[in-house]
Image (cartoon, rainbow, N blue to C red; front, side, top):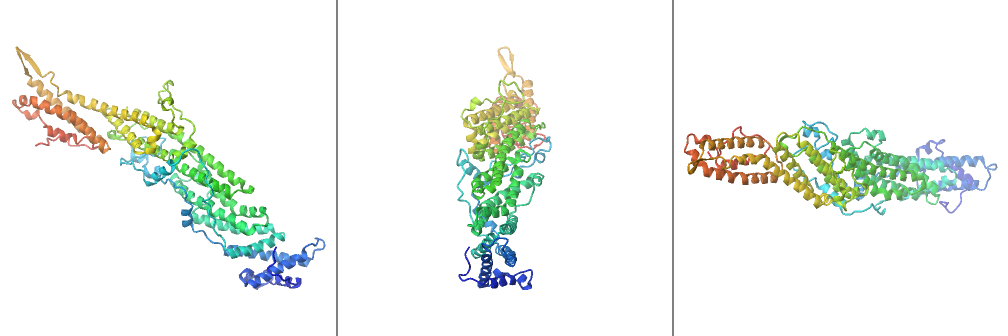
Length: 630
């Protein structure tokens, strides 16, 4: 212990000075603080304390001067008050915004399935409730999930393999107390501890600094929520709180707690490691528990599909903070905090695996049976494919967490409620990639079941064509998802789309084109044959009736993808228009030579070309096909 002055002070003068600053005996002493006085007054008081202590050194308890003992108690009480006042008046609040930006070392996905997708009830009110509570129900083009997801994807896909803990270079220690105040705090702490007042010093330090930490928690938006409080919150509210927690946790661990550890070292170094650790834990143990309780509550909360990606964000954040936690809380007394963080990380991983399994089960069992109008893309398809795209964005994290294959069916299992998937067909695929393929398989299996609820065979095929086309386009539109699914399985999906498109055309247009055949029109007589006008008239009437019915019905069907809609119209026209033009050219004269030809030849080639443009728009047209050429 260094004395503030080289020269000594007489014991009597020292005792008198200490008693003059006794706040219990002097109104003036109660109103003033020694360490807010001139420097010379501060040094004289410290010298007086040292002198009284020196007079007591080497004296046994039985020989101890009661007056000196009483004086030192007064001095310690005064120094405790001074210590508290210096800590309080010199506390600096954090500059939250700048610190949050500086500690943001990884990008976080802010995409929320519940934000970007309407609820299933909203999007398809005619459906039954399902285990999948949230669907992407709108029909807008949603291939672009936003820049946040692109950034997230780039970040997660930039590397692969096992998690590697970073160095702790991200820790940013700041001055919580000015240097001149630290010098005074050290001089007081040194004398209190040397005089046997360690407990009082630790308690007053922990009390003041914990209040400062609590104030900074409020600035950072860290709330005092119990695990039960967190679990009772609605998910939309929790999503916002998770984003705030990740931001706050980076500042708390890398700046706030690290700087509190540094402050303890600045004030108490050289006075014993146990004292430094005790002051640090007295300050931050409660706040640290408060901070980690939120993440713990999320890790053990109800598992549902929409929660996966926020849980992965939490997991990523804790993985990133893990080395900093190990560094800041490296002392033995903080072992419980290190263990809690490790256990939360483990439970978040378990939660992610459980949610993926439950999501697969929900996709397979999704029970809605009422067909979507017009055979358009089913909300389940949009939701599942958006979900799969996000899984691919989190590929790096998920690869570390998903280590087992999905519980898929086998062609030998004989279970009709589970589709077949032979893993031998996907050699070299990671467990996560197999899960993504399995999700696509069970989605198609469910869609096949839903297609059977359509009564019109053509609409069955159009529905499957729409949905498989959407799946293919989502895979092609995401390089990460395409890599995970693989080109072989993508070709299989593309073939299924082509089969559905071909089946639709056969189911609809074979019977239309059948009316335009030559067979059955000729009647034989003698050495020549002629055209039966009655049969020809019936043939035109049948064609008109069937085409008008197809036009009326299929105009209300919907193909939301503009390119697919146009391609299918072109394909229809390429079959229908040449056949009608040829039939009309060969047999028009036979009808026009008779009575009321307009009752049989109702449409020109141009009329049909225009009518095809009404198909798949999703809304009804005029009850009677208008003759656009008139």
